[in-house]
Length: 438
Image (cartoon, rainbow, N blue to C red; front, side, top):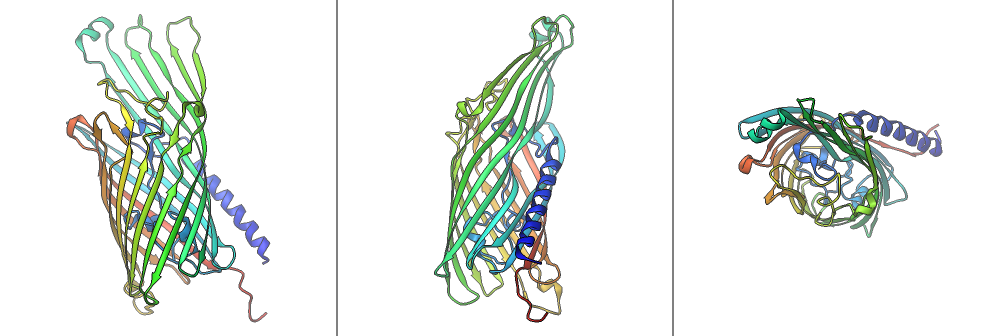
């Protein structure tokens, strides 16, 4: 098969699979959290199952067996003829607690579809589709204040929202002097978010109100990365990595609508340009340090700082939130610390399969990129995982768990305790080799 036909089939397969990914997650909750009511929702954890089983590290990761898109400079850590693909899914169980009230929710999502291929010698490219953020909440409560119920009767307040932002990216990297790698990434964000708020009166002489926001959003951003690897032997090395993601302006339309029953007035619909509200995704800078030992051990520590104080969410209609307690959500700067460990007893063992398996563990702590009134919403967790080798080359199936919590039950806040299962299939093959025999 010719090289052009290889590429054509690859692009066709990618487009069809990407379309399936987007369709599978449209019209349903991509996440479920009361905290997703603010801004563009909860940010999804980046990375493949390989990254997630090590606490989410990847800034200083150089591993020729797995796709690591967290740093575009890491794309060059590969066989120069290797084609690589990673497809991942996740299943998340969440338990919510607020005072004496508790609830449970379960979500299944496609977490990534990425493929990578060589360009020329020590350079490579990757193209992928990954979820960026998700909105998902659905709650209601009844009016309990006697002075209001006595005059207006029973009132039920309803609020729900759904939607997501998806990121499509094209990245490339190159290595110089066999130790220094640089990379760049072009990002396109797009999605549809709907937020609804209703006030339902039981008495017919009062007008129930229905309103909300219907947002179609898009934005173009970018990311840069570099890595330096200092080799001591063929099996031992120290890697330093850094990344910077640009602040991204969000554009699109925000349709605000309002309707009241028992009214001769027609529905009120107002469409605004999101770009004119100055809404932005925060920038991010990350640094990482990784150490490889004896071809068996790999340990990494990452730190990320992301500034969302200029996002404009707290003032933009449809993005801002104010509760009955007059507490508002506000954007802030986030600090994230991640650590991961990998151990492979013997990659070349031909007798015992379990000795070729890769065992991983990690942990993370994140201060969050917003506050609820004066209260921070932090998250922390631990991860465990293993990769099972499949057939030849570096094909493998990765399975891992992420156990953590977000928020707190103090100050009448909501605590999320979650158990997430991450799985992915990484495919590795060698292309364009000329056969020695016809």
